[in-house]
Length: 243
Image 1 (cartoon, one colour):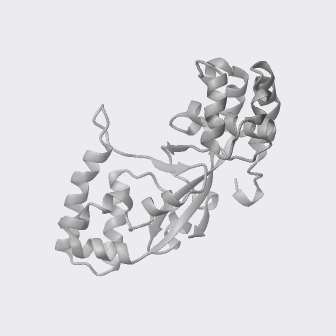
Image 2 (cartoon, one colour):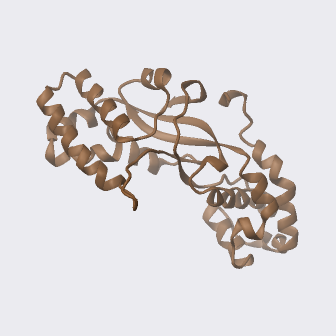
């Protein structure tokens, strides 16, 4: 679905009645005099009132509806140019995808084959350390946030290749400098179904806090959540924003 034809608040409208029931059941409107300025404030007061907070058990109707909703996700990255996303979309960061992209990037900047091999050797070692999970498999996801934040821009857009490429600072300084000093920072926006996320319960929780913030304090506070998905995003489903 194209983002420009999607109402980013549609999930809020669809879930509003269920959130109102929760607010009434737990007398959450009594919190309206509390000082709330941001997501963390709202979450603190709501969790204090609703003890043993586990949304899929405590609010099953809200949870069951929320996981079917689409929400806007933001992925931050630094690239040579936007044509990569326009032609290929956003791919999961498996080692095959990551190494192929890095190799093409370095070739584009006329880095020698021996230096590319050295950089990829170092990157593969760090990749396996960073992404190896308990069952021994590696990588294969896309990270995103549900809100815009300067921290994410600084964290993921400093260098082509992202956090992993930071490891080249000491092992391959010239390549590190090349990747840091070139490219353009982008925010890639796309729609994600909550049930496709790694932790739909956490996202449902954030959505409930967001809607209750409107009901209780009349504040438009977006759901703050950082999650991952494990499938590629097609080019036509991505909005590319230089930042």
